Image 1 (cartoon, rainbow, N blue to C red):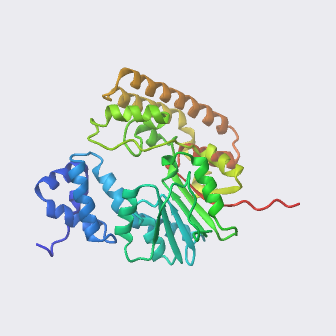
Image 2: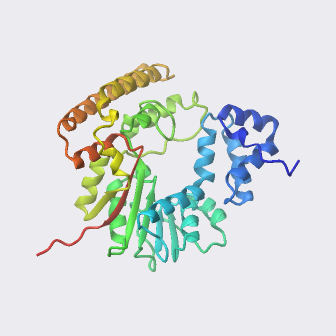
Image 3: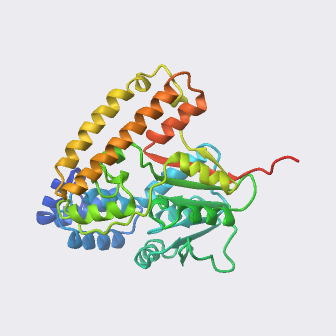
Length: 361
């Protein structure tokens, strides 16, 4: 009956979801409407039906559905977290680089932003953004930030978002330079940058977009070739769309060279607590990870040469992990311990960027 509560348990795991799609399609739709109340029902229905048609049985279905339909709610949560530390979008001119379906811009507009502009290289994503943000006063521009400039009349911006985009662009350096050019000077202006951490153990165990063990450690061409070999076994027809991975240290160096300062968006107090058993357990932690990823690699339906490349990349990662932890473990300064955490244990690297203050004299 329509008055019954939505059966949200149908969304608890992929097996339950796909079984319900086959036998209880209206109930699955009701569960999705309830889980994503901010998103127009017409948008939920259209995406849900296209996804189930194009990716039947995909074991990562709930992850992909949440990535698309949960964007406005995640945007609202992010803006609330930023606001709690005094970084606000109220009255700001906002730009979202790689705006995807516009969910973050929708949240910014609802949070009081004065102007919201999204740029996106994908025509399909822009079409989705037009549908999701229709009537909200949000401006959408097709643009490749690596090779093109904004049209006249756009910018500078008080707030620039670059959320889970940097690993997908053809040049991270050019994208950061674009941010620098279009970010308004001043203490109240900021850019928020977020990307998956290529050294986080969970991302090594299962690449965050595709779920393949160890794949995040490979260079782009090798990772694309591996995905082509194994995606059928993962129940996917998706193309490989990652360009390059930038670890925390390299990212900070890049930002410093172009005149942007970076502040980690992380609660540093528990990180710097040296009494935590966590910091003493790094050897066992990396040994367990190496064994787990190696088992996953051996079970892949990939060519022996691809598996060996994965295992060799894993051995190099584990060696670097141990070396970095040993170097910091004895008498580390606070900034060294925080950098180690950001290098390996922050699942996503999240930074607040600002223009560097001019040096005195």
